[in-house]
Image: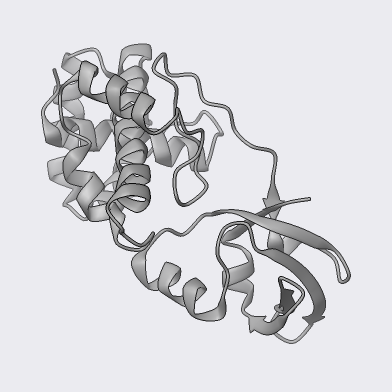
Length: 220
């Protein structure tokens, strides 16, 4: 089994490749930024993972996960997101509090425990941030949604997921009343800064920035 650090690297490479699926490989600098570490340390780890057959690494060309590397990355993501569901639904954590705890719990190496946890939770499809939870075999159904920023004035959407899952951003959403499942109507777009005036759940209005609207996914 990979070490905790190796799992973190595989997960980071998977998420970075998922964010920009151009098949060109993930650069060392992007990995270093995502993991807040030095590029030299990243290079050493990438070589180790390549030696284990978990990714393809060629200097200056970026890295790509092998089939086994992707399987392990998705397994780690599955564990992380299942634990987040458990923490929110059964231990009273708020959605801005679960990430760091789940980062620790995702390294538990017990397939039986995760099977039991999945069953206990009722086999959830999404985590508390709206991200899909990979199945045990690595399959992942991605919900059809669009960015709130792409909605036109007068359009409505239901908040389905958030791209930015940092605690400050989630706390901001709580403050303005934007939780998953909220009905959002675009009342106006401000040309000056591309900010949005929105109505939430047909009740309150709020002005959100372009950055916020580009971090929210909605369904029709």
